[in-house]
Length: 200
Image (cartoon, rainbow, N blue to C red; front, top):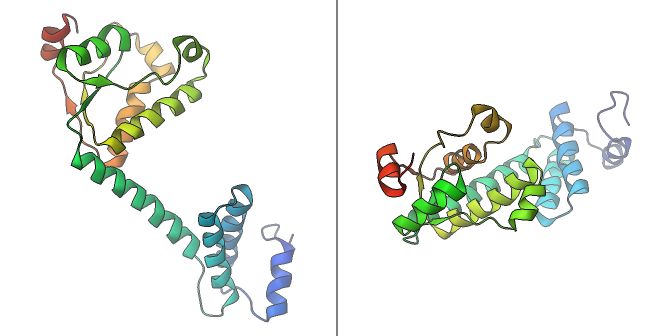
């Protein structure tokens, strides 16, 4: 490591051999960041990002940062694709809300809609950690976004204690994901929920 403890010495040796130096410490920081990302997850994308930052460090007068720009562009393209697919639509509606068994599934069945699938058996779901449940659920939600579903939210279960909701709020994370993707969803009134399934 260099004296500051931030940059691998091998990079500094390489730069001295080719006769150049980074324009700013920021260039070296960006190269270190993209190089570490490539070592953690070797792929075409992380390799291109690291190469872009290495070029910025090796060429005098050229600033690094290309790797970060490429990553952000890739993420924005993914978001745009999801949004376009959701706008195109499949004509299907996914119902979101609290209490799958007593509220969400009955409402979906009576309105000709569908719910997010469990993705596993109830026994395996019960043994999962909150993080594992979130990851599985988020994958199925993203799939529905990509399929172009419209979404309706039937709200919270008034019988669920806030203490339980604070421990694990899966429905809240679903709505955050839709908001992040710019996917609109309809909010069902409590009256419509009651008239459809006979409970709030």
